[in-house]
Image (tube, rainbow, N blue to C red; front, side, top):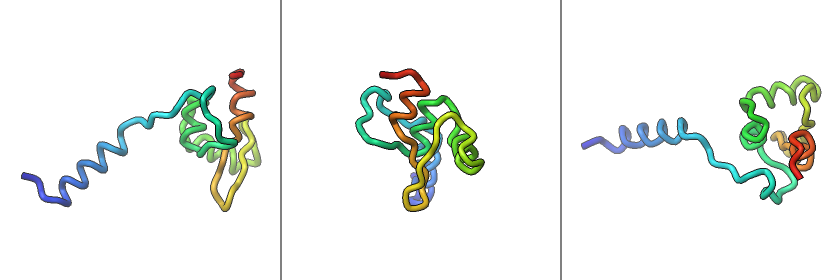
Length: 84
């Protein structure tokens, strides 16, 4: 039997390696999404989007900073991806 700390570590590792499930972009009804979700829709790694934000908007989607966090406008994601 595993100890509590060993089980916790195993659970944490499996949670970190499982891909996150996001709703289709057509169904998102929030004005912005976090970096991980925007990266999923753009088929890029989250770090790529962070680099775009750091380099004064060099990417195809401008980001918004809300209390120091990056937020990506859903309307812009839809425009870039051609989603109605």
